[in-house]
Image (cartoon, rainbow, N blue to C red):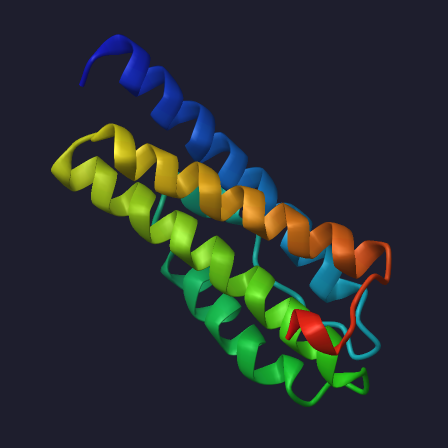
Length: 128
């Protein structure tokens, strides 16, 4: 892995860990809090527990006493995190093709767009 690719990969991996923490915070603030395990502690080990908990969170969001457009926003936010994570995992195995790193960056940007819409309550039927 070239130095600039490795640096970008590490930067995006760090951003994904930060995004997970942000997602966890938003899920914990729901009317029925959804608590996720700490990914930072799992990074050194196996993140399977975190991945399973986040996958389960998608199901639990459906039962939240919130508007449907908010449910979709939370679901999309979670899916964007999974997209970034999966491409990071693939990059670790297959190498850092520039387009793979672009996909991760794009997924994280979309995730942050959903976060901003959730926080600013800018959701409507056109967003779902």
